[in-house]
Amino acid sequence: MRKRLLGIYALAVGAGLAGLFWSPSAQAAILGPENTTTPIPLTRTDWTSSLAFPQFDPSLGTLLSVELDLSGSLQTTITITNTSLSPSSGTASTNSQMTVQDGGSNLVAPELNLLSPGYGYSLGGGDSVTSGLLTASGTSSNLYTLPAVLTEFTGVGSFVLPASTFTQTFLANTGGNTNASQVTSDSLTGSVTYTYSVPEPASLSLFVVALPFLAARRRRTA
Image (cartoon, rainbow, N blue to C red; front, side, top):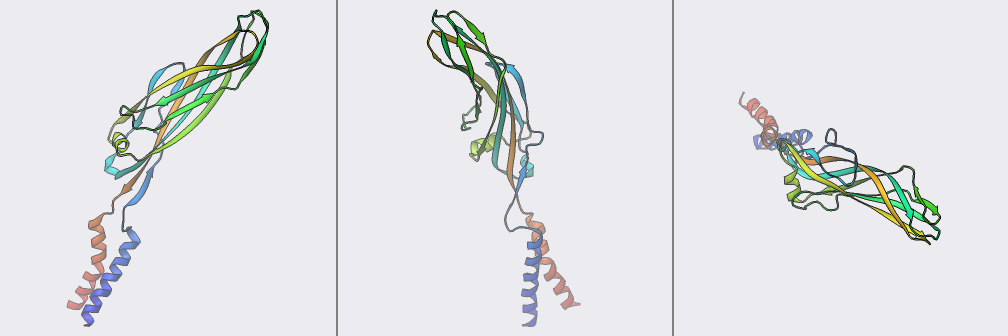
């Protein structure tokens, strides 16, 4: 009876020691956005380009989620022309939408929607005016757990997302007959953060559990 109790005690101690070193389930880990950004420099719109991201190495564990962060900026000048003989006044601004999307359209709302400060004007008949340089910037963040997205971002190479812009001018005026045009450049940068699980090394865990029991058994037979 004493030997049986000693064996049970040894197993209990072994399990406790194992818990000090290993979680009973997979550990969550995060691979941050360091060195995963690929910038598109300020480029005249509208442009099409791409962002390339290093994929998650499956040898590290199992990918659980992908956080896609975008940051961008615009620089614009706006020219407003009054084609009427009557005076006109109002405000003009430039809107630029920067979008990235995978081939299967699995990403939801991965875009930046930037709006420049408004430029106020007052024009006589037949006059035109050009604003100074107007700037804006913004960020967005999206978290994805869809299996199709996780598969795309998993591998040992790079995953490329097409990127594009759509730029337009907003014009609100009173009187006259005005039109507006803009010259705009956009920049875009993307980064990814991977959250993944690290499986428990089962063989080592079993060894830690069994070690006290083996030691006790050796003492009894000595």
